[in-house]
Length: 293
Image 1 (cartoon, helix red, strand yellow):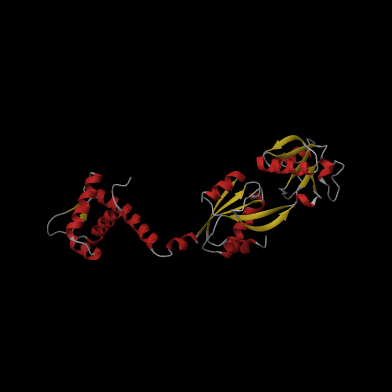
Image 2: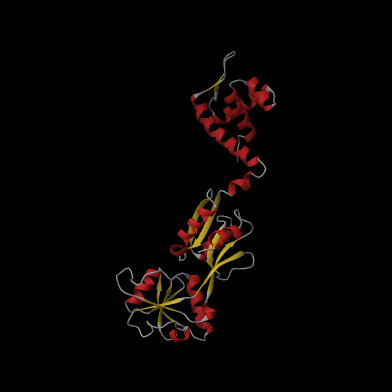
């Protein structure tokens, strides 16, 4: 609970700037006794004097008063900005808080930031790479403005803008019999030991694709990252399946790895920009800025 009101803070700041009760009272259109009472109440609360007051001499802040006035002036100035019509909309135009699914960040984040800064030179961006549940929660609680994610069971409360569609890819060692295929249906992987993402929503979605075919896949490894999945696949530890498709044909441990696109149309998933309610810049304008990606 605040014991010093914003009005009292405004009175103290005015006296500090004016150097006299008479001038401050004319600025604020209040009586000098009202200013004196406000200063006395603030000093009583703080337990220290803010001003040296001697008859016929300009009112000067004490050393403590100098420090207090610096903080109080900033607080009063911020309150004045918030009070102006349209001030908050103007301020939020300068900042966009972007949440991005962590597995999408390596491919999409840097290009999105480049395109946003080209379209909105004065825009400040704050980025949070997170998992799917955390991204949804951050949007619902207003901690981020826009999210980039797959369409993993989002309800009707979310505004959506489709960025692109992606199909999963299969990761295998180059010696695997499907390594040279143009594409492969998921049905051909049903009896293979699989390597899937360790993220709950990702693995649930991938298992759901196999269940649509009437099979329950054998999951040998749950990989915490796409590079771990690629390494395990390249070393013959199973067949990786992921929507994340980084460039390059060598794993972090120097092994060659082959990628084969999944052929099934039902496995294609959209990558979406999502929000709840209006954003500033509006979500369609954000999408226009990054559409070229």
